[in-house]
Length: 130
Ligand code: HEM
Ligand code: HEM
Image 1 (tube, rainbow, N blue to C red):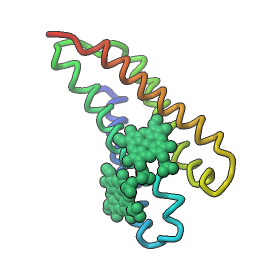
Image 2: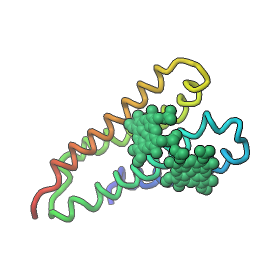
Image 3: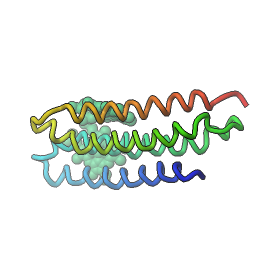
Image 4: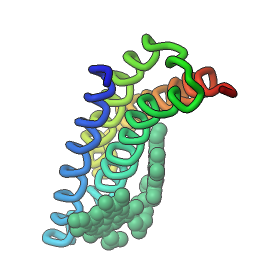
């Protein structure tokens, strides 16, 4: 398994642990929950679920068509863009909800969109009839 794929999977599991711990803290401090629900949601769904799908997808899907990943370079760049985007979103979201500038959240969210687009492009180019 390629090194970066291992890291997609490792980061996914790390976001899962962070996501469920934050989910649990939502129950402990319900007054604060409002600010952290989107952090919980996106660590779990964009961090755990999507990052797992990125990693498993890159590992398995090319094999179905007996092909190689269209662009290992895009796969590597996407890893950094996706993680910068998600970590940035998780940090800036509560600030935005507390009335601070929403610009950082928009910038980091855009990175997450770019990462998703890179994945989509790379997969479309990879998946071919066997
Ligand atoms: C130990 C595990 C977890 C705990 C204790 C937990 C706890 C919570 C709590 C307290 C809320 C806020 C509910 C509210 O007041 O509206 C919430 C919302 C949510 N959680 Fe979790 N959660 C856990 C795991 C997960 C996982 C694994 C996922 C997804 C893969 C997830 C997805 C969501 C979503 C999407 C919402 C928002 C629901 C809505 O829109 O109302 N949670 N969670
Ligand atoms: C580029 C990536 C993404 C961005 C920028 C984004 C942005 C947002 C925003 C702005 C909201 C509204 C939050 C609010 O209530 O104020 C939201 C809610 C939500 N998103 Fe995302 N999202 C992204 C990816 C995803 C993905 C991949 C999933 C699921 C696989 C997802 C699941 C959800 C869910 C379940 C909610 C409702 C949560 C709640 O009730 O608070 N999002 N998202």
